[in-house]
Length: 64
Length: 209
Figure 1 (cartoon, one colour):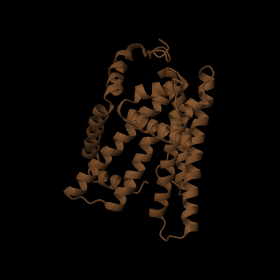
Figure 2 (cartoon, one colour):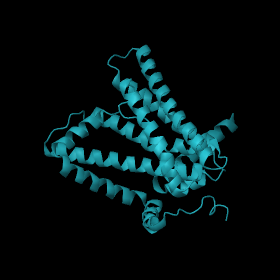
Figure 3 (cartoon, chains in turn orange, green):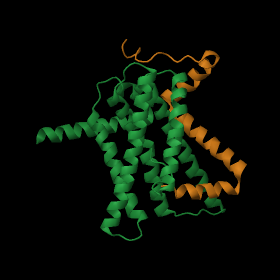
Figure 4 (cartoon, chains in turn orange, red):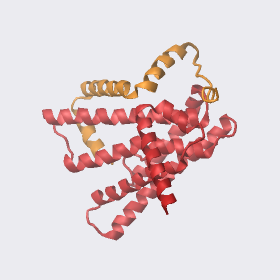
């Protein structure tokens, strides 16, 4: 009981259901969702930026 | 002596289990960490790997292997990272006290320490890739393919970092999403200023947070 009530449930008004759907995916299988989302975001960035995308990758490699 | 070794191994096993939990089931793991009965010593290994990374990074980046220059670079990087870590923990603790009842600084430190896992992994892997496949990338099929893989990997780790940041606020400060967003409106500009400062001081191009 103490573990369940350590934080109060999130309430976001009309967005609560949307939040709970996303949170349930990220709680149990974060890398399934995050991995797919990362790949889709990358492909969209590549289509949007074209050659600049390759320059960004090169710059990021210097980032460490 | 055997007690020290036993405690060391227990802490190491706890670190490995918690790290795997942060990767696989971050919500449950962070809830367990914040429950209070957690081994603080296990966070020592995170800072150990951070030190190993900075030693490795100063070896790669320094053109000549003078021990003084290597030690200086290592010390500077470590000091800058420690400053960033302390700054964020201090701000989160201060804001947490303002938005909620008294919170535990130890809990915030442990939770934020484990959120360094994606940071260390990204920096280590980027430095290794730099050695194996030094930039710049070309517009060939291989260059484009590698760029897509590398940026996907970076975005995935960034997503993991954001999840751990959210969970640090959720379980460390025990606040709702609205208050998390309010706290973030304060924290993110401060992180941005710190990042710019580190960039202009030529310590970190990407902030080590």
